[in-house]
Figure 1: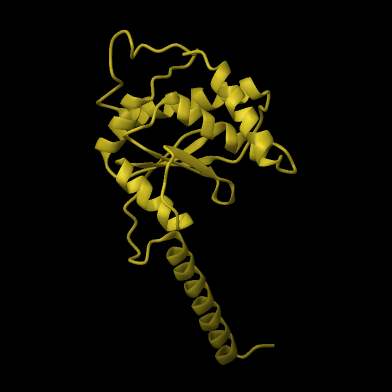
Figure 2: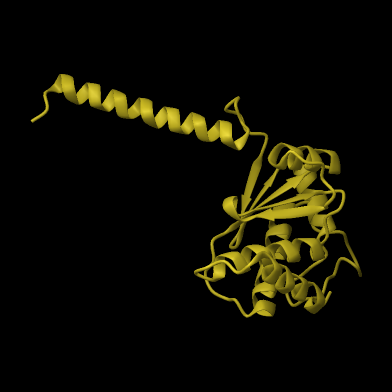
Length: 195
């Protein structure tokens, strides 16, 4: 049986290890200050990370998709400026389910994180920090962190659906398909979307 002294020492050691792992994870994620610039909005199928409410409003305005596959945006409005969180959550969940339907890959799949950067420059800086190379794309998906990276300057529902398809494909099968196969399926989604 452990004495109180040994128990305290063990708890202290365990707390130190947990703190070290927590700190290390923060550094790996790129946040050494302990303060994240990200705000989060969780929906049925996604976790949206954005920096300001204005970024969320712009993202909502750029995604022209509604449940049922048609959009009122093109006819009447540019989204719900008073409640961008509710509006974008509805749009993204409907788009995600549409992509699942096109692929025939329905069911419970791990939520995908969508990081929405305010502009192209911030997105390119992130790409460079991850890959060490210059960015020549408008968005991408990384399986290992189940994250889609987009920016508000270039985002639209087609890009988002394509990247959602990558996440769905990679998490639907027990063994990930080859990248070329996943890309063919994601492009199939592009062709089948009806906006």
